[in-house]
Image (cartoon, rainbow, N blue to C red):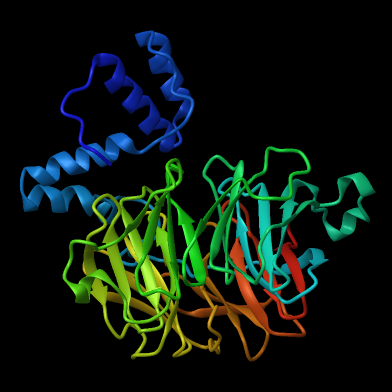
Length: 413
């Protein structure tokens, strides 16, 4: 990420259009192209955001802090300080679809538009499911050509530990205990092997794409968080310029995540801490030590407005923290959370926090604002290893040690 000393009119307008596309305003980007006669930017990028943050940082510490932490003061989304809160109601989930791997199902991920789901397993395979082909149980059996699993991918040699869709929805990234991250081109008909890969000396446990798709953050059995430039393949270590106690965790990194606009990165570790990093500079700006009483932290995810970060720990508690201050704002109790991969998630509207109870093999739901346990459901006969919430509808994907992945949806859909 090199500095630009000067840009032409066309270069600046292109940066603006690519930034708007990265924020989801492709139509506005096309309008600007039509009025300015500058060719439309086909691919979104957050390069302009990064340059502005770098420029503000050069003006002084106060400006830098405002630029990098602006995401935590955005309006909208979940807000625990709001008055007159109405307790959330959990949907009654029923199984709409089930398919099976040849080993325990370990992880699942929805694409950002909710159209696709990827699942992984200890059998080293990946399945790609098209949500539009999942039918309500009342609709009867689907025709063979309409089966939801549209692709099975093979190229790993060990358990799949994490998945991430590129923001364009055309690339799927997977990480594995085989020490590799692999990228699959989903636009290639019948393709089963990756077109790009990254390798390390340690197993990977978690990956996440930057909203622009240009970068991929990864964590695993090494104590450092890694950042990969997807275009060049170059790797960076977060916190490379920080003091040793800030620059790394002291044990396995269990989960990494980006904030919605890419300005922040979160990481969780078996060392019991959560770290928050600036997305542009890679500097560690906050460490929440002993976030779960010294127990391993197994999950971490930002709220959509980036105000909060949700953590899961082996103390059988889910906690929500204020990202800007590191202040604990809510605790969710009543589930047994004692497996290394357990992670709580927000529902599609962030009204609920949900996590799999390893003792009862069901999904527990809490009101996100008050922490009140409001429902138990989506019962399994064997332990749930993972849950993923649809970003667009009241739907869930669950993975289990029984080798099955299940798509759950509200019975009112």
